[in-house]
Length: 439
Image (cartoon, rainbow, N blue to C red):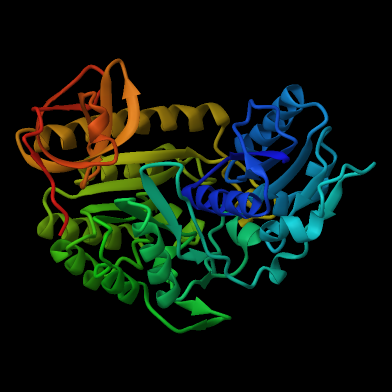
C-alpha cells in the first residue's frame, strides 16, 4: 500500500479541494499519512495570491525531498496553473497539473512512476469549465464546502481568474446533497467557500440559480447546526440575504466582506465594483439588524497610486466603521495584471509601515468587539484545539473562546457566558451550565 501525504497552501477553498482529492486516493487503496511519515507520494496544493506564496511552494518541495528522497512530488493549485514550466524546473518536482487537470491525478499520472523529466499537464485556463464538487471532512470540526469556483471580475491586482478560470457553480440540489452527506458524519458547522460565492448560480456560462436561494435552501437542512459564509463581495451581499440571516435558524451572524480600500480613488483604480458608500451601507444594515454580528474586512495596502493622503482615507474609514477585525494584505506585484503596469508605485518600506498600522487597528477593533460582548450568552462549538490546559472554540459570531479542557466538549455546542479577555486575547467563559440541544 503506497503512502501519500498532502500539503495545502492558501485558502479554505484549496483546503476543501485537497480533502476531496485525498479521499480519491484512499478510495484507490492508498494510505493517507502525515507529511513527516516518509510518504511515497507528496501532493502539494499551491496558492499564488502573493509572491511569498510562490516561495513557500519551493520550500515545501525541498522539505518533502529531505523527508523522503525517492518520493514522487506532484504540484497542483493556482501557482501550478500560472507558472507550470517554472515549477517543473524546481528540483524534486515530478509533475505539475493545472486547474483543469488537478482532479484527474490518477487518470493522468497512472502509477506515479518517476520519469527523467517532470510532466507538465496544464492546459489553458479556458479549458477549466466544469465544476468539481469538493468538501473537507475528518480534518477539522468545521467542514469547508465548495459551492462556486472561478471569477468573472477583473480586479487590477488579481491573478485568480487566470488561475481558476471563469465563474461556475454547483447546483443547489447538489450542494444540498453534499450538506446532507456531511451532516451524517456528525459535523456541526459548514463553511461555504468559493472564489466569489455571491456569484453562485452560473452553470456552463449561464445563470440558472441565485446565492440567496442557496442560502434559503440550506437553512432547512437537518443535522447541521451552523452555516457560515466564508467571504462575500459587498455588491453581492444583498438586503435580502442580510435580512434572512438575521432571522435564520442556521446561518450565523458573521460576515467577511472584502473592502480592499477605503478610498474611492483607489477602488476605481483597482476595478472594484462598488464604492465606499455601498460598503458603509452594508455594514450599517448588518449592525442595525444584528448588533452582535461579527464583520471581518479584507484590505490591501500599498496599491499603486495610494498616496499618504489616500491611505489615511482608508485608515480613517476603517477606524470609524463598526467592524470586528481586518485581514491586511500588503500589495505585491503579480505578472500579467493591470496593476503591475500602473504608475505611482509605493515603496516596499512604506507598504510595510501601512500594513503594521492596520494590523494594530485590527487588534483594537477585535478587542473592542470582544469587550462589547462580555457578559452575554452565546453558543460555542469547541474544537480539538488545546493549549496550556485550555480548549478553544468559536461562538456563532466568531469570538474565539477559551475554557477548561474537557474531552467531552470536543465537537460539542455549549451555551456559555463570556466572562473576561485573557492575556492571549481570547475570551474566558464561565463554566458551561447547559448543553446546546439541536433544533
